[in-house]
Length: 311
Image (tube, rainbow, N blue to C red; front, side):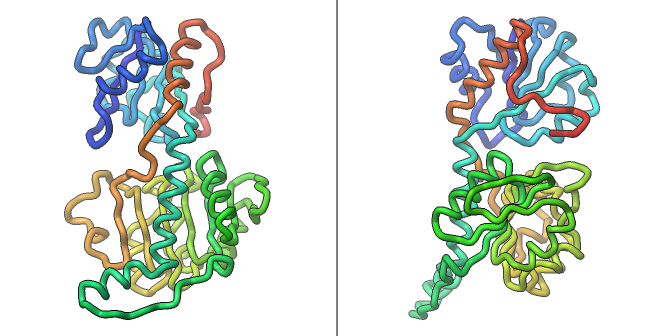
C-alpha cells in the first residue's frame, strides 16, 4: 500500500518537498510522487490540493483521497471519482490562524485608511483622516467551523463587535451567533465588514447574488476566503458600482487563476489576492500520515467527509 503525493497545481510547494515532510512524520512509509509513480496498482491513498482529472483512472486500487486543506467540493463532485472512494480533509491550526490574519489585515486597511494614505503619498499630499473606532465596528463572520471560529475569536479579542453566522446553531463566547438563512439578510445590514469562510454547497453557491448584496451596509467591505462560487461576480461588480458594498477583497474566485480579461482585476473597488490567505499546513501533516496508517490498519479515519452532504 502506497501513498501518492500529487498537489495538482503550481504556486505552492513541490510534490517532492511535501513527500519529504511526510516521510519525517512516518519513516519507512511508501510515499511516492506523481513524478516517480512506480506501479499505480500499489497506490491506495493519494494526497492532493486539487485532484487532477486523470488521476482516479490511473489508480485501480485507490481507496482514499486526502485533501491537503479544508474545501473538498471539487473532489466530492469529481466526475471520475467512484462513489466508494473515501475522502478526508484537514483541520489544521496554521492556515486557520493565517486566514484569520488575512481577514484582520484587510479590515485594518479600511479601519486605518491605508488605501487613502497610499494615494496621498503618491500625490505628496499630507491629509490626515480619522480612523474608525474598533469598538464601534461590527464584523460578520459567515461560517463558524474551525477557521471561522478562529477568525471570530481573534476579532473579538481585539475589541470588535463580532456577529457570527452558520447554517446550524453554534455558540462562541463573546460572539453574537446566529443561524439559518432567514437570519442572514439582517446580519449583513449591520456589518461594516463581512468575512466569508463558507464551504461550497448547493445552499451556498451564488449566496451573494444581487438581492443579498443589496442587503449589505453601504460602504461596507465583503471579504471572501471561502469558495469563489459563493459570489455572483457580475452581480458583485454591479453592486460595487452602486457602493453597496463599497469594497470587495477576494482571495478566491470562480475561476482560478483569475482570467486576464476578468473585470475584477481593474475594478478600483476590488482587491485580489491569489488564493494565499492560508498557506502553511503546520503540524496538520501528522494527520495525513495518521490517515495513511489508519487506512493500512483498517481503523476509523480522521476528518472523513460525508460525500452525500459535500463536507
